Image 1: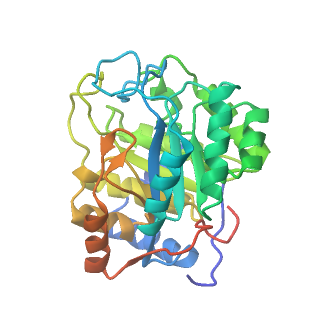
Image 2 (image 1 turned 90 degrees about the vertical axis):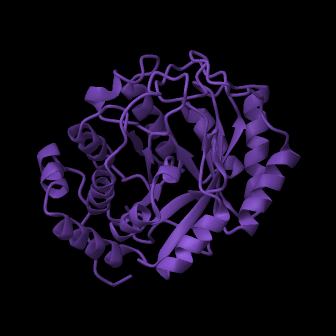
Length: 330
């Protein structure tokens, strides 16, 4: 990481994003890598672990999600996991090198009461292990966001998924404004924001860039930007479809790094479909975080051994400490 300061912008246009994204591939990677080296250690990747602490039965109709109650996908439902189970999973993740532990619950929104109290207990427990705690629980009110922060929640994940224009093709039970309101409540409470999207849902490149413009237009850029490649699950409306062009995905990673220079850009769902070479290109393009473990909520993920071997082959290493976003404010 150099001492050079990269300007932060919040007024990107779709046309500017397209101009960055569509430039010759070597030029795009050079620009992204130059910015990445000025804001982060280019040889270091942060590792997070994601656990589903409440699975299945979600009333939302997100077309990509195997946990939606609208679709028959074979996902086994379970209520909020006991504290001792989550503690064991978090300790295992920490021993394997993860610095952030994310807990997901398949809800439309958090309901005050027994379940939310159970989540707060889980947050306190994981926080006591000296890990960054992240939650993704659906929509949040201001008071719920404040209580999560007080319990020790460091980050809250709430993805925008795609562009505002394409959003209605994927979800009808929650509006884009609902999502932006939750992000606002998270900010007001003092938590960091984890917000990204999914590619491979039938959207065009312009929609992917529209998502990045939405993220980069926020008053404070999301500290974490997870980029997911759709994992197609039988039973969901998006079970059938073509694969994402690997180089288009790398272009998106590079464009995200350029537009949001101090955000962690995370390779999330879909890594089992990415070759080692594709992931290596993503790291060159500015990705500096991954989700580790055998499973992401209910979908497969590369195992620890594979990730460790890939880092060794690349001469890179996993970050060993928490507080993983850039020290320069976004």
